[in-house]
Structure formats: C-alpha cells, structure tokens
Length: 85
Image 1 (cartoon, one colour):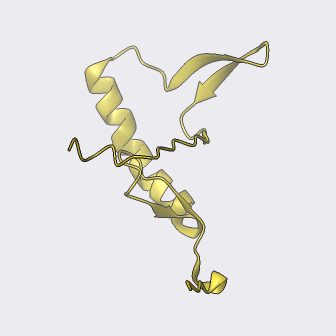
Image 2: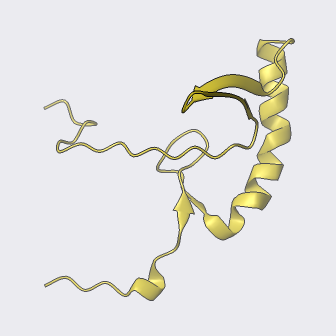
C-alpha cells in the first residue's frame, strides 16, 4: 500500500533548461523575471536580430509566441530513456 499526503504536493513547472529542474509554481514569476534578462542577453549574442518572438499557427490562427509564454507538453514513455541498456 502506498499513501500520499496530497497536502504535501506542490504545483510546479518544468525547469528552464531541463525538466528535472522544476520550479515551484509560487516562485515562477520571480524566477522568470530574474532569468529573462540573461536569456535575452544570450539570445542577442547568438542572433543580434532576434526579437524574443516567434510566429506560431495553431487552430488555424497565426499568433506571435513571445518570451514568457507558457507551453504545456506531456512526454511519456513506458521505458527508461536515459538508460540505453
């Protein structure tokens, strides 16, 4: 039998560069604002013409995906993909 106290479960987002680097939802705004400046500087070094937006078509509509947009994805596997054996 496995018991889980749901009051101890904390809503989180996947980390910026790696999903395991989770960000507690209550800290997401602060962490995002701190990292936004660094992300923009890194992007400008790689591509001086970059604007922080990207075109996206979804559901037949074209929109501009901007820095700070939250995308939701689910990646599941029945195997351990980090272990090639």
